[in-house]
Length: 78
Image (tube, rainbow, N blue to C red; front, side, top):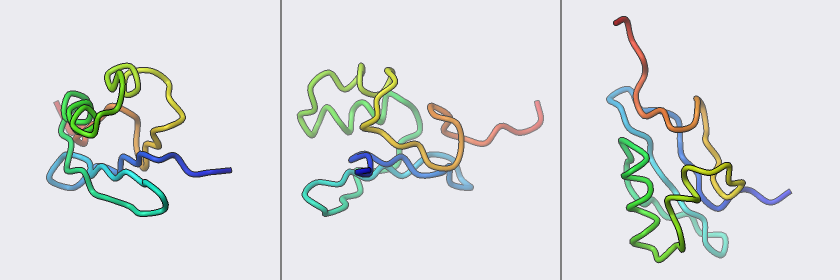
């Protein structure tokens, strides 16, 4: 099975998730997303059609690593 072309890494200790895209076998870091809006913007800048639907839908093109999708900082005590 082929790996998803967009990888959203686990949450960093300071918050946010590194976003990587794989194109033709080469991984490129797009940046650190602190929200779905950041992730959508990274993809929009690449010219991805309908990036909001890609991020907010249940797409197999995005692999969320280590933690729940759409969560960008660890939840602590209230």
